[in-house]
Amino acid sequence: MGVSMETARTWVERWERQQQRYAVDREERFTVICDIVEHVCATRARPLLLDLGCGPGSLSARLTRRLPDAEIVAVDMDPVLLELGRTHHADAARYVDAVIGADGWTDALELRRSVDVAVSTTALHYLPAPVLLETYRSLAALLRPGGALVNGDHFPPDTRSCSDLTAHVGRRRAERAGDHGHEDWESWWTAAAADPELADLFEQRERSRPPSGGGDGNRHLPVCRHTELLHQAGFSHVTPVWQVGDSCVLVALKD
Picture 1 (cartoon, rainbow, N blue to C red):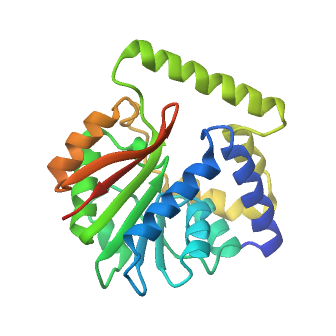
Picture 2: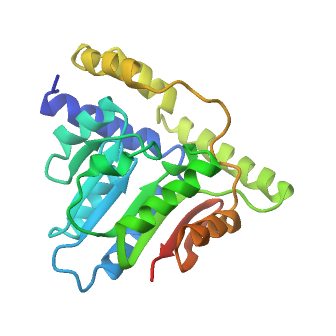
């Protein structure tokens, strides 16, 4: 079921380009996350990092370049993206197939020591708020004292009027990116599904995808509400450290 190096490289590179449509200053956000991980792990000889919703390994690859001695466990539920990551970024991480937030999902990680930093970008917003709270609790239990959860995502402002404004800015930015020839999310998946070398993986994807529960996950939750949930989950200190529009890096520290 594996894919060739060339095929994986092609689809990962196209993934990187299409993702630029959706994340304001995506590369800078990755850089900020790496800065935070580097700081938190400054005294750790071989830090253990957990990449949540890793996709094809975009953040794991950047982290391993910054911290070459780190051990990275990258988790996702999508067999297509996981196989692309395993092939194209094989040395970046140990890739794990698990549904974040599902019962017992942390057991699949097979961790033998505490995590130094858990990171995520645009992956946790799919979880309904009650599931998100339990996921935050699970992550707090996995982290060592002094460890951190670093989440880069789009968080709406507290007020509707400001939310409409930031949404408009995001739409306009996506339109400008489209004018430069970047394919969108749907186009990437449609094109990838037509690649014969990925056919078995897409069949597996269809069999393994859980039924949609509808709703909008927790996309409606502002930073202040995430902060409340993180405190409830056992994180002592929570703060945004970077923001452009509604794209934000939120850091939660465990005492």
